[in-house]
Length: 100
Image (cartoon, rainbow, N blue to C red; front, side):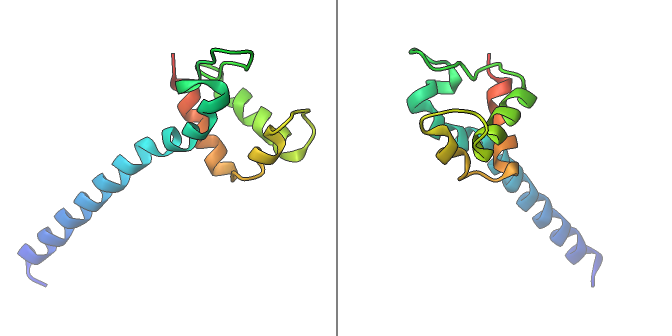
């Protein structure tokens, strides 16, 4: 392979990585959008629901795992939590914990 071809391949890979990272930056936010109807936009509730914005990541993960296991009482969260993988729960927790 010519050196110029190798450079071209590396540049193409760097561009793909940049695109993948840009998508990952919004991944948690996109998953968390499903929470807005009860917990408010960006996790800032306007009703009786808990605010998720600024909540420690580990607490969000623990709560979601408890909902998923059925050990934390809830009306709909037990069913909703079952729809998320551990990686998705972590992405949601990252997003909400970073909100002010």
